[in-house]
Length: 235
Ligand code: MG
Image 1 (cartoon, rainbow, N blue to C red):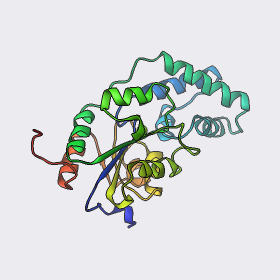
Image 2: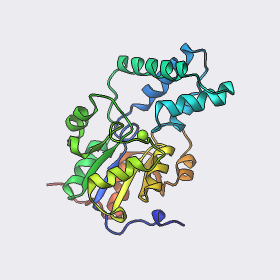
Image 3: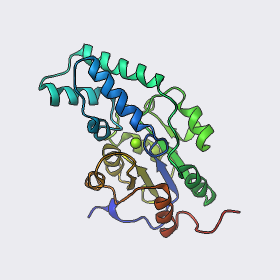
């Protein structure tokens, strides 16, 4: 058992992933990946979108072409597929919030804990939306623009720790993707997961998650149990 499997005794910061944790946006990502690959005559499996979630577009395209076509991706494919995917994403409707997450965040704030959002996303309107939908200040967001390496590299969560300015042993991560969990675990942080996609729960446990839940309410109960939030009704 590694240190990161032990439940921290005193949590002062909660680091949230965004896609699939705060927003129900993964279906849009999966569908636009499938469509973009199709334009290049590649049959991209839906499951891959979820397995690669959190990594860069470059990583997803190289890996898929290697697996499906058994060759290296050409620069034209890497650029073209990603451009098409981005174009299609812009045509998609705004993703819904994951039910219960806003309430959960409010409770964490009321308990006096720090919240930081750690995402690989580079959507230009992202900071605005996080502030409007969840009350997260732009200074408390690590986005794809802030890091050199995407998840599963630990850099995003290491930067999240720095922004939270709380010791690693007093921090918890909420993720939904296997590569995101890996990133957080490699940054040394206790990590729990919410399974909002089609993957087996075991994939998230295998990546290193200590607990895997289905809903924000279940996470709320767990955070009450470990005294991150209070079970009393807010005033
Ligand atoms: Mg995610």
